[in-house]
Figure 1 (cartoon, rainbow, N blue to C red):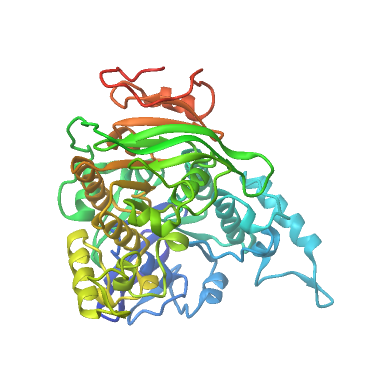
Figure 2 (tube, one colour):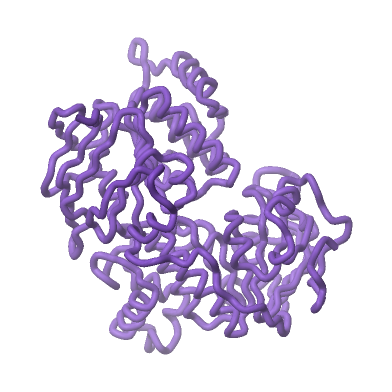
Length: 522
């Protein structure tokens, strides 16, 4: 008999209008990395939330080491040695790293929190597992990669032996992903058991021992990774063959839709600049990708471009019109669509319904309002159309509260809204973050179609596969500057990596590639 440390047997969990988990069985062996794979909205996070005590199932039972256990809340889960790193981190942003790690289990002497003892334990754990952190840093001022380390240390501090990672690499750089994979393998080797929710098949093949696949809330099967392939896993997940290659014809660049000249942006938390003297053009009918390792100025540049932050100097033109100081609404009405990096902070109003989010930037148009009153029927019909076209899965359709949807379906809703509204320029920042392979294939197809309709696309991505497959032209940003411009047909991943890491750079400013150039190093 297999040595299962956790068994979730015949679990059923329902929400209004949807059965999120329909009679699912999952068995975790001691000391293994077990991947949980499925499309957006397949029920993966719900199943793990049941194990962690955030939800109570309508049917089924949970066993630990063969004994039936009741998990009514996260405290019960922690008492059983179960910890969870959530897809959207559960951290208090104004607290320090140390305060977040010990929150809820603070050591005390004579009724006073003993931070000295806690600090020593946290530093020892960070040293042992290579999770270097500054215990006194405030959460809101550290990177998302560092915030994830804090979440992992929260589990280790509580001495959890069953570790749940919900989409842990969705917000990480390639280097941080490699580090996390090594950490997870290290955990398994010392006897901890890992449940790993992900959409990324390369990561499953690299780190997992077994994989359980869910589809539309149902159990499809469990396979040994050594006996399967990426293609087989993707077919189990979406029920059909998936094309991993982006099909597109050569770009036919036309007039310039975006012209950026000498843009400089001051860093938020320092006197230095996060973006320095950046210039480039995006033409109608092409996809230009801004590539680079996270933290090299891409986020600040896009915020300045879209109006979320102010420029220190420089100019921005959209279709020949100076929009440097224009408002966000003016930029939107002028032809700019924006899929933001942070879907929660800048993409959605989470407590609004899905249909209200679909018209966030258009509710004032005659189609959706008359004399100051919203046309609810027209809004619902428009939202229903987008939901169907982009396969946005939600329990109650257009009436669904956006907060209750899976992260991937929230992302699809934003992409649907931005692609459907009238625009000349699409700015897409990490548009496939948190999406499954089927949804990624569809979004890439939509972006290419947008290009073929004569729009300009500025893509910002940390995924090298996406950079190489989707773009027509690649600009590499390093430490706030454009350091190289490339043709994805002629550049290698290794060459791009050298520029992204700062080991190589071109000696002249990057201008738009002239037609007929081979797009190699300038």
